[in-house]
Image (cartoon, rainbow, N blue to C red):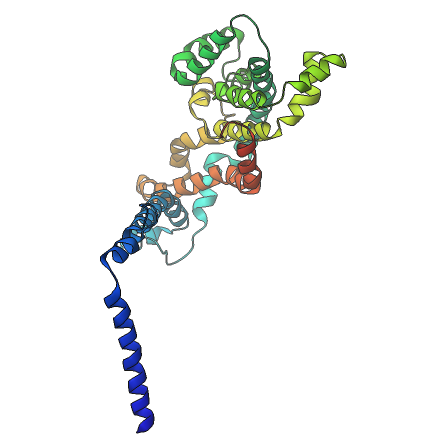
Length: 328
């Protein structure tokens, strides 16, 4: 009996202490708890930030999760409206049909080759252009900088017609070289942005290195390739990744320059897969039923190689962006 009374008294004393603390709380203490002494330290502000992050994550992840689910759904699961996120069975046939429709082996080899060559030429030509705009003085330099910004702003639809006329006269239409040739001259997809990235990096380097190289008898070209270009590894890595990914995902230029050939990159082959699916599937009813699953599987196959590259190079990519001088 004494033990029970002691326990009851202890609980009462603890409850009393908690109540005393709550009763001593002032209005300002409650306000600081929810709003903080500064607006970005309160509980309500943190809850708002978490809510925005959760909503943003859902917006980005929902299509990816839906793609992964739909590509392994069987025909019966697609017919069942009760099955939305968790399929009753895993069906891999959509991946096989998508690979057949995409001609995956040939198309992925073409995409890797074109994207890698374009990235290589962008690094070489845009690097030299960025160095000349950053460290050399010549007439019309400011005009070239303005034109460089305009080239970044002007949409590609404005400049594509002269390219079509030029390629037709040169006999390069419907050849893969038509996708590579603009990058040889620092043009291509977002070429002006790559020049700006290199220019920003070279402007951060000390002038004393050039003065020392001139004293030693090194010319501008030798100094660039021996000293400045190796120092620009962060910018080289950023430009390489951007150029590779943007060329991989591009369907606008391939659709115009490779309109009547089967040797096309993977992204354009996916845009053409509707006609191929009609020959693979037996009936129109089957086509309408399985089209979504096959297209989701095709989307997964298209994004898989650059996704692997990004995951392997993510750490180096973030470091390179910080060191390139493009972001302070």
